Image (cartoon, rainbow, N blue to C red; front, side):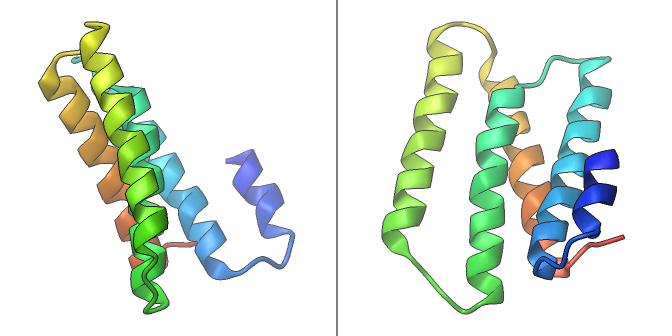
Length: 114
């Protein structure tokens, strides 16, 4: 919250603030979920990057297939690594990815700022 407050003192484009809000929503969500059930924070983080990128592409009517492919390959490698290391079950990894992607995507597309 303090980071967001300090960031708002600058004059950045609005999507930067939306990405920060979406990151806070994702972080609070996985913290609350982890009180009852294990969820992958690694998957949340990398899927959040993908969600914010897709949201920005949609906002600006822009598409960079190469960049999106690289992000998705890195996301796939991260999720696979968590499964191979047996750090998470598939449900924990996929739910973490869903929380990250959806929270960042919707915050960027809807322009959530405080």
